[in-house]
Amino acid sequence: MLIRPETPADQPTIHQLVRDAFGTDHGPVVADLVDALRRDDPEYLSFVAEDEGALIGHVMFTRSLLDAPERLVPVQVLSPLSVTPARQRQGIGSALIRHGMAELDKRDVPAVFLEGDPAYYSKQGFTAGEDHGFRKPSLRIPDAAFQVIPLTAHRPWMTGTLVYLHTFWDLDCVGLR
Image 1: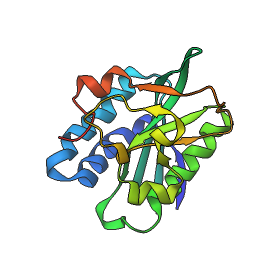
Image 2 (image 1 turned 60 degrees about the vertical axis):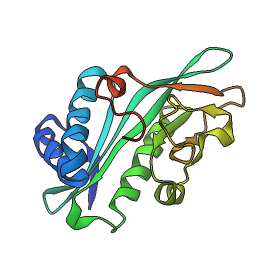
Image 3 (image 1 turned 90 degrees about the horizontal axis):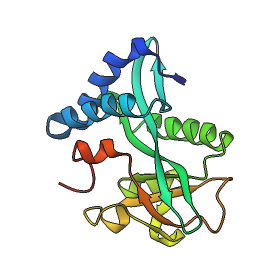
């Protein structure tokens, strides 16, 4: 398996991969979110997992802000993580997360946030945001689902409220529905 940055030629395949990974209920909305995040965050970071020429996984990181007491701090949000259904539970998602986190750490990103299943993401090193002095951007997000990994560039004063990129709000992709 090869993990590499996505290319423009990958984007239609990623759209379908995300739809398939999230199923009929959520897949169309999450795939549209990926397209909108590319449009709204020109500095997004996106990786694909490729096996024998086929894309089998995708992860995307986009900018958000931490409203910290000293100043606004640029941070990243991991969303979404997608693995083609036939290849789930084979470590592909974990490999994509590790690859992306290493790249973000090199870029001096202080923290990466997400909304997700703590049973899965805790195995990737994510912990509850409130345990680090962070506040979730919406009350619709369950406390346990609001998670973070502080990276090397994180400093103790970097606490406060996560402020999502407007795209998550525009597509109503914040919290449980």
